[in-house]
Amino acid sequence: MRTAAATVFLAALVLSPSGKASAETPASVVPGPKGPGLHLQVRTYDQTALAPEIRGGMRQATEAVLATAGIQLAWVSCDPGLEAASCPAPLGRHELALRLVRLAPTDTTGAVTLGYSLVNPTDRSGALATIYVDRVSRLADLSALDMPTVLGRAVAHEIGHLLLGTGGHSPAGVMRAIWSPQDLLSNRPGDWAFTPREAGQLQSALTSRRTSRQ
Ligand SMILES: [Zn+2]
Image (cartoon, rainbow, N blue to C red; front, side, top):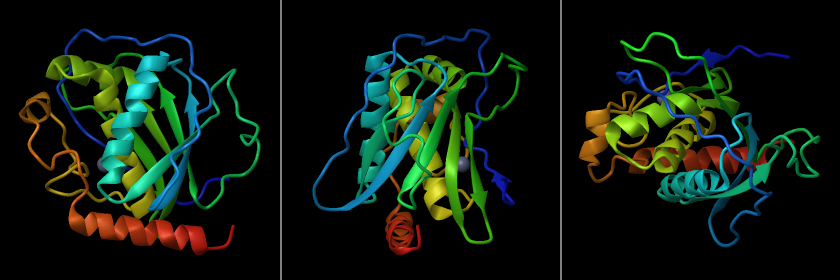
């Protein structure tokens, strides 16, 4: 079933003609961190067969951004061939789903979407995000940045949309709308963090999720 959903555009960039695929063997199910703070569980549905080192780097980069909002992540692999036992169960309120996919190359002259989240603006909820791994890889190439790091930051951006339940963007921080190669190269302090206001909103949203009905 689909609810009224808004397609949220993550970012835009000018593409180069070259793309890079990242296809290797999936990694294993990874338990999440334990300790103080708010916890969020992310189920991954990786249709791109990320190499283990790329997956690991992605997770680290995502965790680093979410940590700026005081949120710790746990990962559950529902990747093909590596499905955790809990994958058939419905998503809990404290869980999100992340799809990693590729798209066939299209127009490379303008801005493209790196990913999107489905959010219900009425009750400000969302549970499914999609990232286009090949596009992220191209942006990483253009920016001369580590691909897993860019990928993880893109994932964090979408998690922000899902938790906040909005497609809105910020002029600064990880929730800004446009990520150009030049923007990434400048790597300004705070670019890969939630703003203090967003951090408070994320914590409230996650707390609300965890205390709501299952
Ligand atoms: Zn966005």
